[in-house]
Length: 258
Ligand code: PGA
Image (cartoon, rainbow, N blue to C red; front, side, top):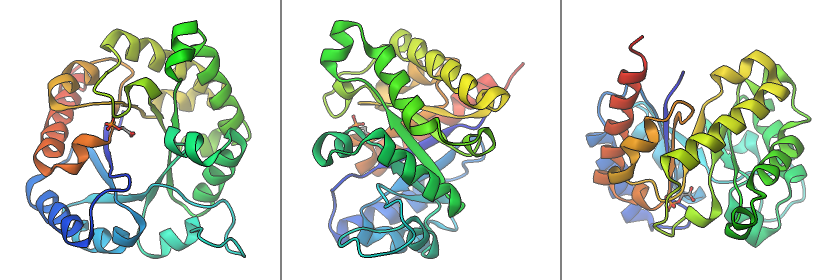
């Protein structure tokens, strides 16, 4: 199983700050044989990130894309455009896009198809809101998100997708799912993936996202179905992000021992 640590910078950093973070990551992240490291800076810094992170083997993702190849969609960016500047992955369906920009599962499914068509890695985010967990509907919510966005995708293509479970109540709040809550939902996501993708589900990485930090990452990454993290706040600091990569590398080394 692959282990992935992906950093979502959201709408943070100006050019000089982005350059400084990219340089620090290139220098500090080091040998990442056991962990695939990906960063997702804002659009204006993607090409710069690709150029400066290539030798460090750190992949670059966008935070959003449009489902069409090109066209009259003012303000939008297509998967093919991202690919053409060396971007290899894209976060889609993040709860902030669902909440503030009304993105539906169907629209997100279209973005996933566009990314697969462009030969890129979609990182598909799903997860329940606080009220949904309190009502006990979190499994239903995640099942619906998965079925609607991933249902139309063929099993062969689903094998090229990464899922990130991000409970909305844990994003940027300092609250984290307990390892038990994370493992329970990740096992559920894996089961849903099995219905959609068959045997390929066993090899689809499922990342946890929501206030992951060096002090809670070890326990989360030790869970059987947690295959990495999608990191927000802690991805803005090269030291914290590098520490998370190291913790993930140790967890991966541990799980690979029979
Ligand atoms: P956080 O963000 O680590 O700041 O909670 C995670 C995310 O939104 O992907």
